[in-house]
Length: 177
Figure 1 (cartoon, one colour):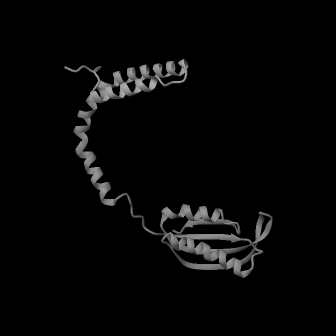
Figure 2: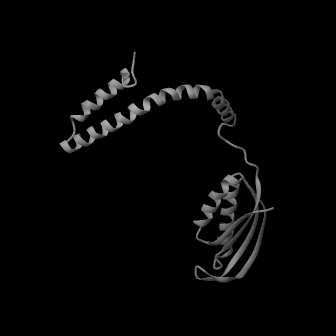
Figure 3: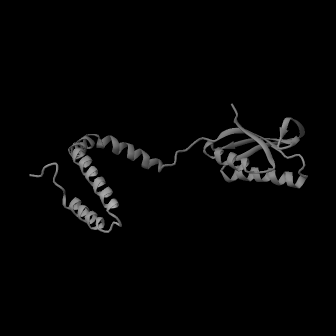
């Protein structure tokens, strides 16, 4: 009869490999450290082994519950479907850009939205307005309001792209009612 301290053939093989590599240590200090580590691991494993054997029966009781959960996850294939939401995106763009550069920045933002599966419902250019405080040494900015429909999971990527866009001084993305 096997006791809790007996090792399986696979464990014996792993132990043998460990002892073979132990002789290749560079110093006695390393050998002593790994011997202490091995003894500590064996002690912990010896104390946990009976509990691990009982864990198998515990899992067997709850296996049908886990199987149902796994079946539900397989049905979605890990892709939850989120409904599209409506957002307002307010951007303040540098005032010293000419019209082509301004339209280029605006087209780039619209492109990011459409690439992520969203759509731009309406784009309002409010024009140049005075800022309440200095932003990156600018007293004015060109305001743009975009009404957007997009997936909530892609908003973080859009905001990250806007943050690294130099002509965009500030932006704010908010959910519409």
